[in-house]
Image (cartoon, rainbow, N blue to C red; front, side, top):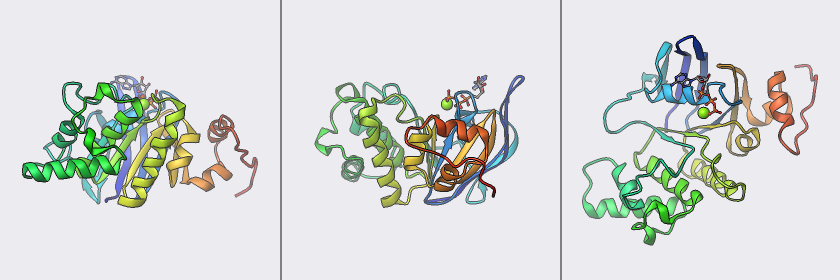
Length: 249
Ligand SMILES: Nc1ncnc2c1ncn2[C@@H]1O[C@H](COP(=O)(O)OP(=O)(O)OP(=O)(O)O)[C@@H](O)[C@H]1O
Ligand SMILES: [Mg+2]
């Protein structure tokens, strides 16, 4: 796994500065939670990393080198909010996962790898032949994760991957993310507008507001002693948290 560095990244859409000089590091083997209200620029930052947003300035580096955004084996893999649209409805889930694997493997190797990946995300490999329409939202999101991992990514970017799911199954998907980080040493940028979700999976938290990172640090520290008023607002919306206020640092 690798370190992903955003260095002074700026993205503008016309007169809108969606991302405004953001510097952020996702250290190897860590999950960095990126939190902020709707429109704060989280997805735009993620899209910049995969070459889908127009960068007016800055650099995005993977282990010190610019991130390749073209070609087949892309080192950054994204998982999106909507598991209903991110999988091809005409393909079986096994085919979807196999499609994302590096070329060159034999049929038997591919089949074994699909089984391994489905097991990794706690899906029954015997169900490799089913279509996404036969699965629940949570199961589809597991397939989307397996598909992202099939590309052997250096870093996974997860953009609101639990937002479209029932609250009752969000926890299971979050547990899976934690497990994958622990077992695979996965580096991940985990995006959510919900600080309660982010704090559950992230080792580090960055808070985005109007295109800028206004606060970042180890999750426990940001939650216990938030520096920024906006972070305190986000925390106030999380049940069961009580940040210390006015703590001198
Ligand atoms: N393709 C685009 N064209 C024009 N403006 C855009 C485009 N994509 C994003 N924006 C604008 O950039 C800003 C940041 O949007 P972005 O989607 O990155 O926010 P976000 O933090 O991901 O929000 P959400 O939590 O709703 O997903 C917003 O003002 C948005 O309207
Ligand atoms: Mg978004």
